[in-house]
Amino acid sequence: MLKRTNIFGLLTLLALTSFSTKAYSWGDDGGEFPAADHYIHFDTSTVHYWIPEEYTGPRNVSLTLVFNNTCDYVHPFEGRVTSDFGYRRRKMHYGMDIDLETGDKVKVAFEGMVRFAMWNKSYGNLVVVRHPNGLETYYAHLSKLEVKPGDYVQAGDIVGLGGNTGHSFGAHLHFEVRYQGIPINPEYIIDFETRKLKLVNVNLLVNGDKIIVTNAEKFHVVRPGDDIYTIASLYEVSIQDLLLLNPMMREADALLLDTKIRYH
Image (cartoon, rainbow, N blue to C red):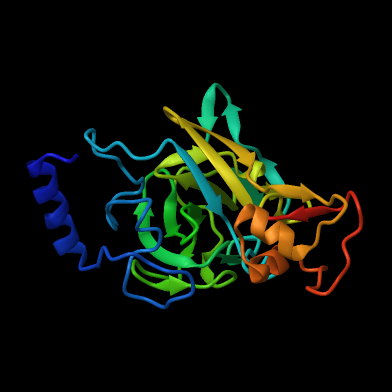
């Protein structure tokens, strides 16, 4: 439970930002916080999300990153990776650096709401977007900002132009993925060679200032007598959901033995 003083502080912050804390649902447009079930504030003046000391949220989290892998994720910029996530010259590098030219268009990876868009000493011109899937993504060293806090963006929308601002030695995009302010290695979920998602459903194990990412997808192996109805009943999922999770399957299809049917 939050202490009363922290609640008053939170209410003051919300009044200053003029945003609502109502729950946000996929695909709706504007006005409410995305991922309100994962975050307790929407701070438009601080780079990193911060968790009050008294707050104890879930430490094991399951997220669905996209519902349509062909259009719900867009790679921020199609350049080569020049620096990976991890230690670099004895200092932790919390994102992926992607080569670009000043003025190149940088795209948002997932739909969401812009939480932060301004200059920062280290990041230079920085855009932080909070997504309905629970993640936040960072786009740093931009030469120009094309969005402002509160803007709702779709995957692939332009958030800024590439640049060399802040603590940077040459034009590039610094791209980060975080959950509740804790950095995640983007390569856990994104293939930077194919520029597509590696995982759609993920489990996050939060351990202090580190997050372990594992695949949350679950499959049923077809046995004699199985059909789509028995599988749906067994795992308490709808026929519609099974068809969405298995795009090549049709409701009337006979299932081949040992075929893997995804149910989560």
